[in-house]
Amino acid sequence: AQMVNFAIPGTGSSGHIAGAIFLCAMLGAAPAFLVISCVLAIQALFFADGGLLALGCNVFNIGFLGCFVAYPFVFRPIARIMAAAVLACVVALQLGAFCVVLETLLSGVTKLPFSTFALLMQPIHLSIGAIEGMLTGLAILFVRKARPDVFDIPKPGLSATALAGMLALATLVIGGGLSLLASDKPDGLEWSVEKTTNASEITAESRAHTVAAQTQEKTAVLPDYNLPEQEGAAGTALSGIVGSAITFGVIAALGLMLRRKERHAR
Image (cartoon, rainbow, N blue to C red):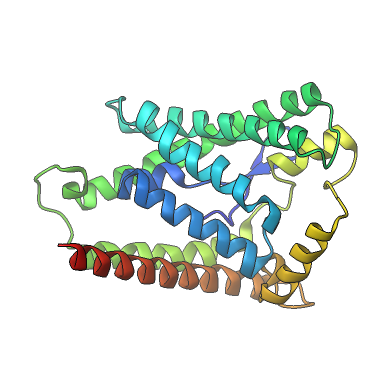
């Protein structure tokens, strides 16, 4: 679902969901953090989406702040799911956006005007967070109705297999279909950088940057969610399906490893 960028009206920008709050509501904070970290690593390695040198910052900004700050301190104390989802997503994205500004400043790679960059990043991510919050709330309400026991509500619902099948089908439809309708407008970060510097991205030259770029060239089987040297709908749809399959495989393998380790510890 992160592939489906939605346009932010009147701005020339777009946004996409981060997913941390939804994962936390389904799995709990620690497992959700593990999943979102895997997703970000897979995006960087297999699709060259997000630089390898920025992976740690991305995990912190999207995963840690969402799972260990916004979820326990904002989402959980609020009784109404829709309000909790909107507020938690807004807080998570506001914190993440501000950390991007701070990290950019402290990196020394570029000298963006701190106040200008912050004044662009915060409002645009406020809009993105509000939209993600509404989508997250609707998704949580769907799962709550289908499987109340996930939320410790003792009512009959769909079997785990049926729910997993429905979510798998939704994954294929969104990743392989709806992703083709994603907005081509720059996302909140790209838009903010462009407004601040009149350039579409920040560039830097060093040995570390060169090695990271070369590594991504070798590992990215579908760079920028396209077939190699060929842009088009086929590559985008294939990327959505392949990315989902890789994520599922990695998470399943990690789950089995942790389960085996737990059994041996007993």
